[in-house]
Image (cartoon, rainbow, N blue to C red; front, top):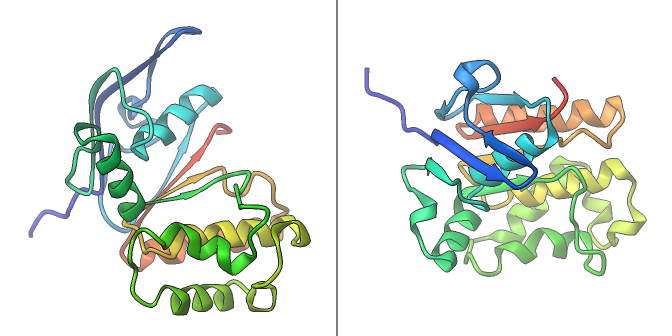
Length: 208
């Protein structure tokens, strides 16, 4: 049986911080998270200290390099690239779902979805955006600005934005932290469906 492609591999990753002696942000011997993710799993990493969660998310997303060890995403070591090349790699291969959404307040919903794709040259981006808005029940809100949306709808917009380029890896930083039970279930169902379609989702949470 052929081996599966490794989507995310964190090997002996250590990140030091001024406030603590050291912060080891790898798999902790499998207690919370497998160090090597292959296509299709939804992996939930629970960290007892928020700082560790932030470091895991940043390193897995090629935002913050480790002091030692290596990070491999989709067969590439992004921290060996220039900052410009790493940004391009991240935009193409990694999608982010933030707890606080980070929607652009002066842009409409459809524009929030399309703005990150402008530099990627994605074919039929507007068509895919329309399909995602339909899937998430947001078609009637595409011309609204974020302030006119409920918290649940804002998170669905942020989720659609992350999924639009079809990244191999999606990093979800407490995606249900600000949501009620119904909206939390809806978001988790979307992430599970995306993983089942052949992608990888890493959901990070500081609450075990």
